[in-house]
Amino acid sequence: MEDIFENTVLCNNCNSRTDKIITIKDNFQLRKWLCKKCNKEWYHPGDLQEYNEFKELKNRKFQVKLRKVGNSHTISIPREIIQFEEEFEKAINELLDISLEEPRKLSIYFSRRIKLIKPGEEKD
Image (cartoon, rainbow, N blue to C red; front, side, top):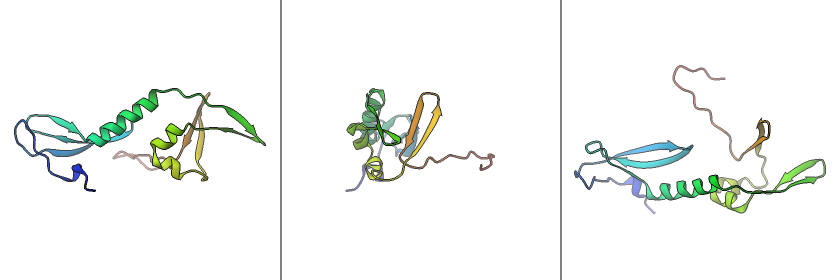
């Protein structure tokens, strides 16, 4: 099915052609249209719905059990979190990246983190 973002959108205020822009909000990519003439903007409805679902999940606190299995420990990740992102479901039975970011904060990465290099910075 064709996505609405692939089409030209005209501003309903001034009838000018809008520009397609991708913005990052809370590390979440949102597509939008911007009319430079009257400065009006519209977010892609699908992206906005997914972003709102993300915010609800982000603000929700989950309680999970820490269990001992042999010499290791396990936690169960709530279904809502796994179902939100297709990448998570694909990662089942695969190795994940996990790191102790600071005392009492453990992070699990379902995909490789990409460090953006700003102009003038050197690669590590």
